[in-house]
Image (tube, rainbow over all chains, first blue to last red; front, side, top):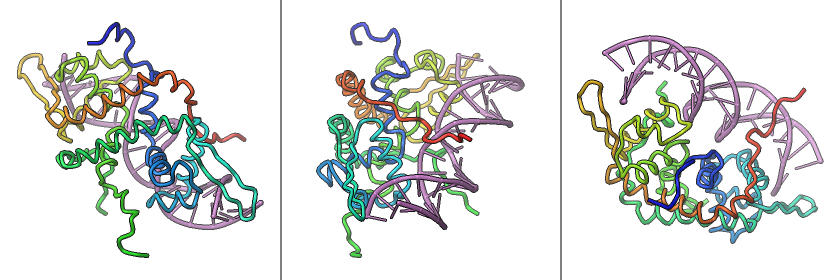
Length: 129
Length: 129
DNA sequence: CTGTATCCGCCGCGATACTG
DNA sequence: CAGTATCGCGGCGGATACAG
């Protein structure tokens, strides 16, 4: 029971929901985590792409641009030929990396228990043709 | 390429991704958090519904059933008239509450900084003739 | 190398109505 | 009170082709 808390619990724009919204898109947290853990906060497009097997080029760039629009990453362009573009975590991005790393650390620590987790039936199910 | 290339850290079923998948559905974390924080881990359907303004009855029950199928909540039925159904966090559910509470605590602590977070334009491109 | 433009299937999720 | 059944839409996200 927290002090004076819950007159309006779940406003659409409350802090927890805004954070969770970031997790709602498939690649967001993986990109931020990869940027942080494997590229020291900055990476070129192709390098990032190679670090994220399974992502399509379209979703990579689309998600990066959305992150840029959100203020979480900065896009830097070297006007050379061929062009060299880098994406770097902004200060706000480095902050958002915190909860992401929490989740990753927790998940790895509890990987064993997570094996008990059964998959949801409604989620992606393959059809047998 | 080498067979043991280190990019296998993103397997579809690795622990971090399985956790993130839970966050990918809109109401999952809110339900678990509400169950934990406002109902001591157990609540009847209507009570939960009242604690989650904005959710539709359909999504409430659907999500609860998915959580049950995942092994995170247990469904208890009192065969009375009218029926009384309760949903309770399972041991695994209580475990999964941990990362959720981490996120919520972090979000509240950093609510100020989160104001800097710009919303992404929910649709990138509308058809404009 | 980096990015844009379509086309398109799938499904999350809300609204509504109905059952027991 | 608890739950099911339908319908419909928006949009995520993949495949592919094209461009600077």
